[in-house]
Image 1 (spheres, rainbow, N blue to C red):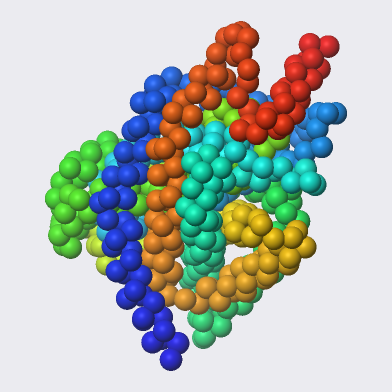
Image 2 (image 1 turned 90 degrees about the horizontal axis):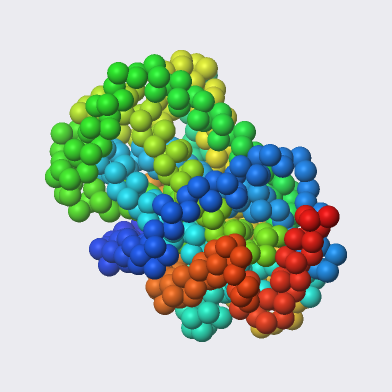
Length: 509
């Protein structure tokens, strides 16, 4: 009975996925990025230095320090780095390792090139999401800030029905994303255990792993964005650095194969063959779609998801948090995904890869081939950490989407509904540990696509506003005396302006 239900879901999803990730959406993703790039005059290139200088560099310098809050403000928020860590933890997940390898196996090495293309334009797409997210975010009576694509769709584009659709898609996408990550954690740890000992009932072991993940997640998400931000700000630097070091060592071990790896990426990007000499016969169009879909799955630029975390930031300047979005996509795709691609393509001969290979098994093989049993242990640590932080981040995204859907009812009733969502989210984490991985990955791909459509439509519609807010910020930085564009709501704009003036006064003391 259960298998028949899953089979029916798979058939329906295959049809829907083909529509959602068809050419119209791929063109919309790329077209939106190109439009925003033009309207911001290639901001991701011109202000990339600003992105580094005003985001990750000062964040590293201030680690362990907490900025003094404004006396005039009653806002409850997280630091810029904590907001970034939550957002990056939602993007840096299994998609950066297993997802990239899956794209190479099924779409060929050329898919990596299209990941880079989507990321280049995705940098300004993510920037624009953050700018609009902070500009249209709302503050409740407790001082909590909430924002996301559904807010700027409803209050910026003024299409509340489309904002509601975006929120609903976000709820399902959050559940799907947690399912993908949990599934890969249980699969990886079970595979690791079977590397050294024989396992009798694998499904039982996976279910136990799922339950453990669900319990730990519950403890964290009960504390809200503040606790999520603290946990992710500790885990993200550690897991990212560990992966970068291991990847660089593996690449250096095969340094002579690096030029040919880059060569085959560019060659196959415009080639009609896929991995394995064209065994599956994937077309040029399929290579593009695989790269674009996996690129969006990895860095989430265009989904309108990470902006939910960024909107909870203590910063008052939309553009400042927007620059974090530029670095976020750069770090996620151009660093992490590129390292995965090069490690994989230098470890194995690209011409011998089969599209039928299991992506999770090949991911572990990449580490075990280079580092033996030590590599298996490291992989079994890195992947669960990547996946777990994504689960935690997306629980917050889903929670905020639920809040938006029921924004018109009393706070007490809304809180009950949010708690019910958290309970369902936690239960489904445990259940998803035993579901067939291909199905759950395909389902989440579909929900990601559905979530992207209303967000991209809004980004196109509000592209002029993004350009104006950007011009306003950099004009003020040059010393021009103009009214700051900090919030779409006059009362919040005045409050944020007062906070900025107070902060400037403190710095001159």
